[in-house]
Image 1 (cartoon, rainbow, N blue to C red):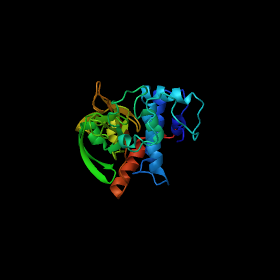
Image 2: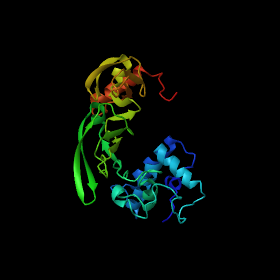
Image 3: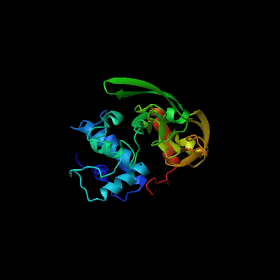
Image 4: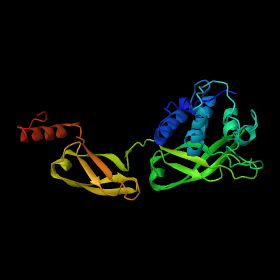
Length: 297
């Protein structure tokens, strides 16, 4: 069998931190996900990326792998596990336990190093997947359905979304991963959450931003006006003398949490059209009243 360089697969250095490994995995998993990518061989690349992450994100597996890699192997080199390695059970012997994992992986981790006879059963492999939800669901929480492909079969799961979940957070569904072997438990399903763009609101960390149109007289004289939030419409006081781009803050109206975020309101002055004679006269009178005003200074 061929040696696999998992660091090279993820495009990270051997001394990469756990955070760097996770970031590299997320980027590649999104790029090659079979439901998204149109590139040739994307499904196979997705499998190799998952296998590399399975090893490097686990401290024990990574340490064992590094021990073997220290022997000077490079990707593609002919490989057999070192003498006495517990996982050396012959090419392909563990394929039933891990499904999509390679013979190389099975030869190292099909059984822990130094494993004893009779201890071949192992917990099922975790499955990583990605779901996108709308901002309203991320804010208030709720339920969404996720369709997962298991070989030729599709299964649909109902997932509870906690209120205030942030992009990149992971929801763990215990026992919904690959089945275990030898009577061991199934792995878990790890769902990384993405939040879709919203037509009115923008997510900025834990804060939520919205643009609020106001009339020139509301900005000049001050006014109390309605403003939408994800929890419903509230009123906000526009200070007299406000300009477009001024930011107002609604404390605690952002994403739920401890503490919650705020809602940031960006004022945008909108002028009515001079669509008839009366409107044009009004604008002309306004211009006469402010003959010394130059908006470009």
